Image (cartoon, rainbow, N blue to C red; front, side, top):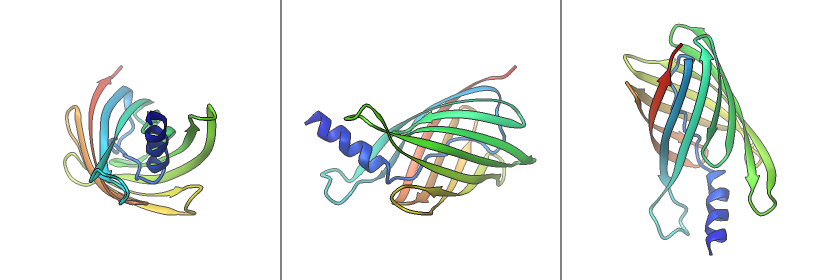
Length: 170
């Protein structure tokens, strides 16, 4: 029963939007983020919403950033500052098949992170997935001192994410 539930979570997590949970500017130093996302459950689920944990790590010099995050795919990402309050962000997600013990597929995403006011950001992005050729996503979020809250609409509908961050600057 546990394996069936875990397999279902892995399958359906491939259909949900990717939490951004990062500010528009690349990090200077290191940043660790812990959080989660809530999204509507499939009709066949006995629960109205599902949740997924989010764990992220980023390191950068203020101009570029490299990141690793886990929200049931493992995402390797990079961000480059284009202008004050504007960055280009992209990544590759590796889907792990727990039954096979290896990577079962990959998807990619790219988007802009635009600061829109004090602490707020907007992130339009495209995802290329094995199950949908191009899937747009739009995220509006708030990045404050140690906390991030965002809502968005992605490949399979709306989502809400919350994150707590800890940063170490040089």
